[in-house]
Image 1 (spheres, rainbow over the protein chains, first blue to last red):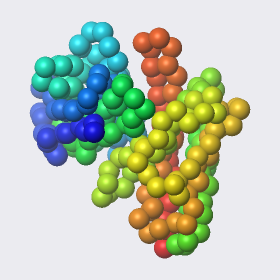
Image 2: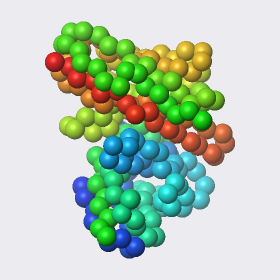
Image 3: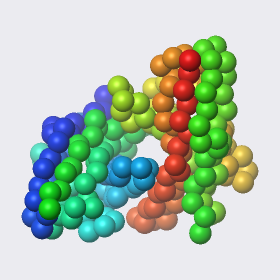
Image 4: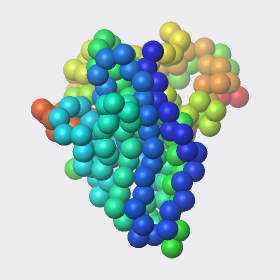
Length: 114
Length: 114
């Protein structure tokens, strides 16, 4: 069965510093990988998706994610954090082989401190 | 362009009743997916529809069902409501052309079961 783990419940980073939100996954085949963000009182938003191709995926708001097949990871990154990046981030995975549902991680709360 | 709309925004139902939630996707988007968000279980995928066909389904009991109409609008139905069905139900519409993918979420329907 497919699964996804976000090992950190909370990540704190100073404004202007690089940020990383970690995600590891487990699938039997090849993965579709997603990152979503949920801002307070603004709903859920799609950030980026990995299907195939380049291991570095660029998304919205300056975010990018690095796909690492050997480490089964898909960490979300941003070179310089903004206070407005403070939100709840979700990683999700779907196994490309077969008709499997999308599975979400528990979420990581990012706090960017001015 | 208009975003994803969900109706109603808030709903209070009693155990044993049934409920129907509606989602209107962004114009031109043929895929609609549904998600349940609760404090305990987090984000969970319910189902995805594309051109009136269910393309994928999450691990939910048969009480949860959905459908999509020819204009891409979608409804989900929950029968015999249980207290644990209290949640935020999110709908998203998406468009995938080659490697280009966009997905937008609605504001959600907050269902309370008493």
